[in-house]
Image (cartoon, rainbow, N blue to C red):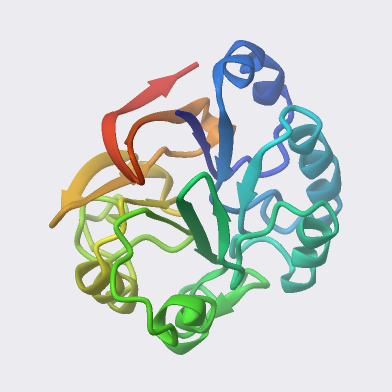
Length: 224
């Protein structure tokens, strides 16, 4: 299975057009939030429409620049995994939208409890093993190479990191911090922040299934 991993398009639709070949090769598309250009809510819907017409299988959350009610657009198109556990082909998909409170200038800033509320389908479940879970959060996990701003300060979520350490999902995808595009690991979990699509960045994750179990066979970052 080949996943095209995107985040932070911020109203940019031109780069969606440039990725036509990648959309064709992908078995599914992941979007880790921020359809909206900063302080320009009118840019959200055109960006959203540009994405959803490109592939039949999209798994998405919203970001801190997106109005919290924009999640309804994703739900209407059946692509939301925000507080919504989706099971397909022995993979479980779950996401958390929005970002931690920071500047106070974006519409969807939350505290740690707000981010974790989206993950209750796992945290309140009796399921013992989440090996085949793909976690998609706009806010990256703390101190993982996914979350450092230009000043070198880690701005990620400590609670999301703790979630990954406890449940060890197969993959944890995040966005938000444009300058921290990276691939890393945390225990058994492959981490990816693909960077901002508005800056021409994206990622590819390749998975291989053996029986009911999946493994990561590749995780790479790309620049248009």
